[in-house]
Amino acid sequence: MNGLNEAQLAELAAFMQARNKVLRQEIREELLGMDKDRPRELAGAMDQGDAALADALVDIEAATIDRQIREIRAIEAAQKRMADGSYGECIDCREPIGFARLQAYPTAQRCVACQAKHDAQYAHENTPTL
Image 1 (cartoon, one colour):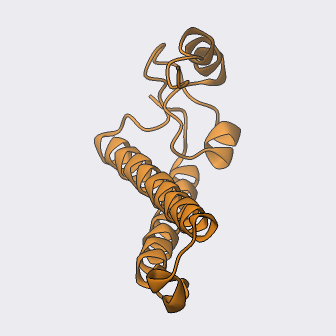
Image 2 (cartoon, rainbow, N blue to C red):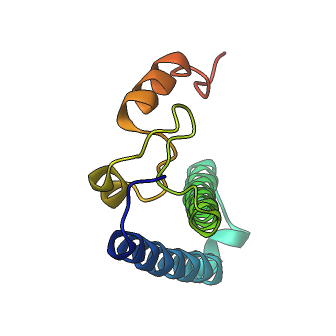
């Protein structure tokens, strides 16, 4: 059992639903605005500095959209856990995740102790190497 009452689950569900809506709108606006924000005159006459700036802007926009998509996926996974009754239960130790943690991070899959262990064990997993 996750240790959450109906009011707490409803609060968290409403927050995630609203956040999901906001993220989808931000992605939509980001994609629609990608071309509008770039000066058309740069397209024909770019020097190396302009091209580098344009590439950096594209990379930043792509990274922003990627982060938003990952957050949407995490929300959808949390909503699925709510539906099957496993939301709020640590995936490692099966103990309840505290309500305060879920308020701060509604898509949390681990309790604080297990997350600390996980972070220590996999700290360098996504660190780029040369």
